[in-house]
Length: 83
Image (cartoon, rainbow, N blue to C red):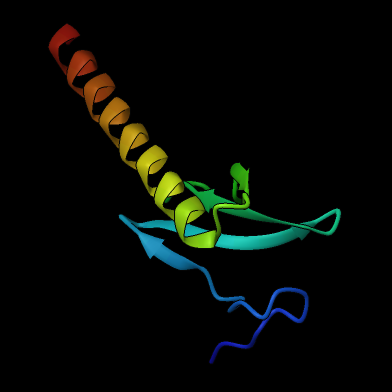
């Protein structure tokens, strides 16, 4: 069951992208997009929804998630090669 956030009309339930959770939050009467790493229990990363809209902001968050995953994979490979 999902209900709408009364401040935005958007679903409160986060969406998933590559096991990350993407959600919205109103901060100082401004809508923010927040995303959470699968191994963490809080949304560490956030970005204000710009005048370009929510869809564009979600696209940007997905891009940053993809970059983070690439960096984590590269770091993991480098650590493996040192062993």
